Length: 153
Image (cartoon, rainbow, N blue to C red):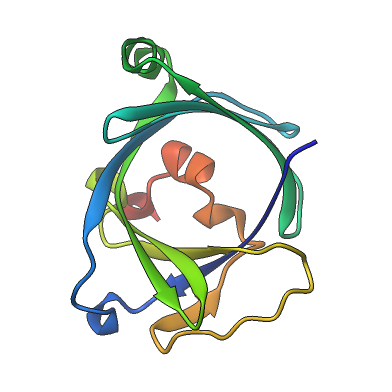
């Protein structure tokens, strides 16, 4: 079973590297439950259907499948509540890839960085732009943001 091991952090965008280029992401949730989520996402011209288990901690089951862009457009119309829009930047810090999300629309002003790890005990260094770990705080899950946008907090 595929696993995703990921940690999530709030960041200070004012001190990010200045050479970052981003890609637009649009995603919605077909299902959100205590057991997990079913998400449809467009990343530029790539579309994916993802199923993730809903567990505490940094490891969860994840199944991800490429789907045709037309299917993604139709599925996004079926999604619950708000569509989450963000710009994703990638940067490398001390050999590790960090994904940085700048949220848009109803989540504007929120910046979150994620790092995927190969094991739960893997060591890594934090960049100076990292402020606070929020891995276990469900308020920062994209599925939560689709139901409870950041600007309503």
